[in-house]
Length: 269
Ligand SMILES: NC(=O)c1ccc[n+]([C@@H]2O[C@H](COP(=O)([O-])OP(=O)(O)OC[C@H]3O[C@@H](n4cnc5c(N)ncnc54)[C@H](OP(=O)(O)O)[C@@H]3O)[C@@H](O)[C@H]2O)c1
Image (cartoon, rainbow, N blue to C red; front, side, top):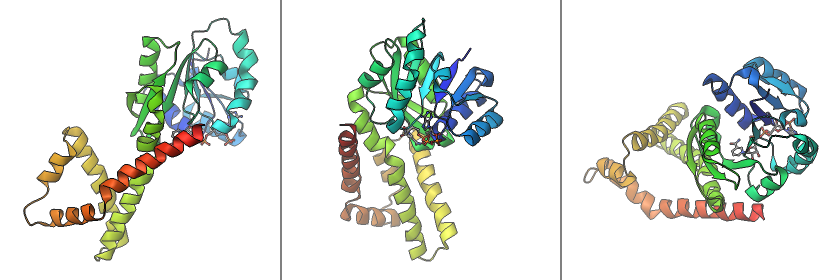
């Protein structure tokens, strides 16, 4: 019996599997992953003790099925597994999809009658520090939503949104790691510009971003409160902030989210 099936054993799929097994949400032997690359199958089986197959239809009968393929192969994969889905008498399974730009309506055509949850995780999920937005389909019951939340909670935080907000989620948390990478790189360059060795500057930059985020989160601080706390009159931080305001940091980030949101809408059309 396959309790958890996954089609596509790539980077994001592995991140989920590794944590689902480590957190004992599923027993490794109850997990089956289909993946075309033999070396990748062998790696996943050896590393996590899970079962692997080259045949996507074997996985289609899982209680919970996660689609972790690229959207480009969605049609091929769903046509391949359609006969198996039709033969399946019980239609109680939960289908989770992390495919960007693939709407619930399209998923529900491919998985008729199934509870479907569309999810958008982000890259920090690969180290267990992601945030995943989920939107639920028309056949989803409260227990399905709870199960989906528990599964994605294995790789970070989970929020539920209406599907209409998925492009906005993509613009913020989906693309956000890219924005923050730029911030860390620029802070590092700033440190180098004022005389720090690059390795030390890089460590200071990444830990400052991580620590500030952790502080905001753990103390549930509004960002303005933290900013006020660290700006002494006539001090160094307010001098830096004045420069950031003059350079339009806030509007640059707001417009970055808007641009990514619009691009996500375009790609989904
Ligand atoms: N990584 C992220 O941070 C992130 C965030 C949000 C959403 N996503 C989405 O999550 C999905 C997976 O992302 P990823 O980063 O894990 O990508 P990935 O590493 O490329 O994984 C996709 C996997 O699917 C396999 N595959 C290709 N064709 C297949 C087929 N016909 N049947 C079964 N498996 C097939 C690929 O195998 P081969 O290597 O042999 O081609 C690969 O192992 C994508 O849709 C991505 O956009 C990713």
